[in-house]
Length: 92
Image (cartoon, rainbow, N blue to C red):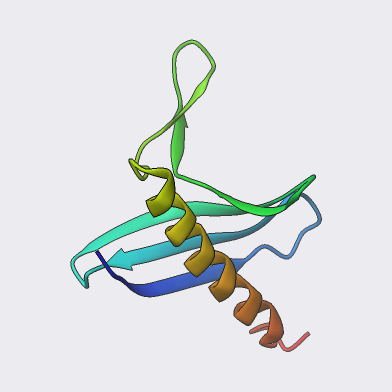
């Protein structure tokens, strides 16, 4: 499995959520709405989720192994750091 594209949409407003990311896997499968979040121990990713009837949030798509999660998180956070160095599209 190769992540062949990462699209980062920075979040301008203050808060813990810093970006929304889409990844493409093997040029064939896309996962949208991965969140980059600032936590107490630094940045981490949250996979796309939906609210269940019991009020809990459940991931819609997620890696099966922690090694795969770590790999995806590293690629996303590296792309996020690069995006933070680029000027905003608004010119601000």
